[in-house]
Length: 64
Picture 1: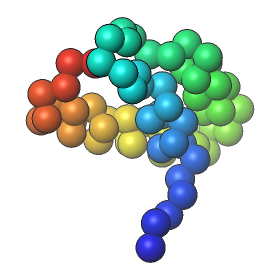
Picture 2: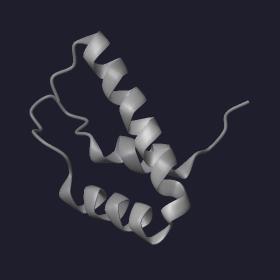
Picture 3: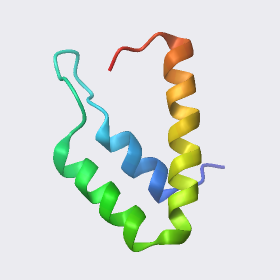
Picture 4: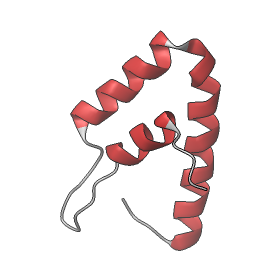
């Protein structure tokens, strides 16, 4: 069973997909900030997901 989690999708959309892309996508990042600040209850979930994502990326050796 796949559970859709909006904050996870928003965070993943901020990261570049293609090899040559650098830095976060600004429009997606702006929407993520708006989402998190307009729904304070989600801010903790966003933070926890982002922390786990960064840890996984570091373990995988990603340099994005």
